[in-house]
Length: 317
Image (cartoon, rainbow, N blue to C red; front, side, top):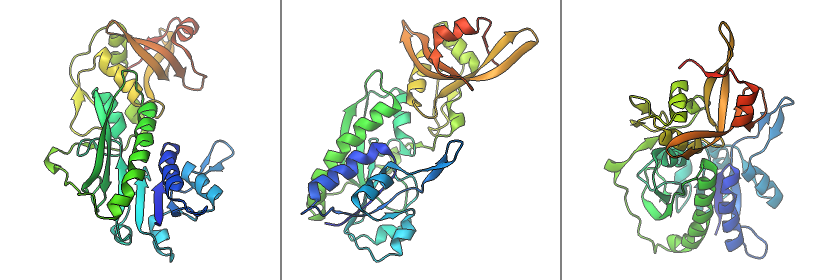
């Protein structure tokens, strides 16, 4: 069995690790190539940061490609592609190059939450159950037939990081168990119900913004009037209650993080700063902030922040 793995972040390491462990023969890995995102300059000194999958491949001596089309130009042959949080669109010509296609792990119960932010959408929406779906991809995003699907409960304190790690860890075992029967034609694929599809979009830094008036009301145990559009879930809005804000904060932890504006000072002598909300919880339906970070400063507890800025007020909406 020859596999090309298309993936990027650290949380998909269990997937490539499970495939390598189960199908290696005489120290020869089934992974014949990986396709991942290019290293990017980070920090003040702009050092190149390589993706987790890139680093794994270099340690194993597996060829690395920085685009799917780049891989297609080389004479490497493989039976199947495995896609897990690659972060780029895979062209149809690349899909067609694999005799058994490409299988993708999507961390939601498709057709619910297609797109780039399914785990964030699950938490922000208050869903009590989620899961992951393995599909055979086609040229439409998250559209292909279902190979396998499993359900997972969503914990009351779940964050983007904890839920995503758990889903991909379990999906790694499920995928490793089904590849051989899939290649042998023993698994019947199931078409998605496309009429029930819902969609999410790529989250950007600005999507973490919470209007200051919502925060102020939630800290008083009150809900703000009207509806709050959750920008990364298509055609979706919620009443900005303390419960909704607390879920939103968890949904975007650790990145990009929820944030708002605060006013520091008093009268005409004030400055407006961005305040990142790192942790929060509910007490009797009232939002309680636990840890915050003022722009340009280190993280501190909410109590420390209030002591340091006793005249703080929430900024303009």
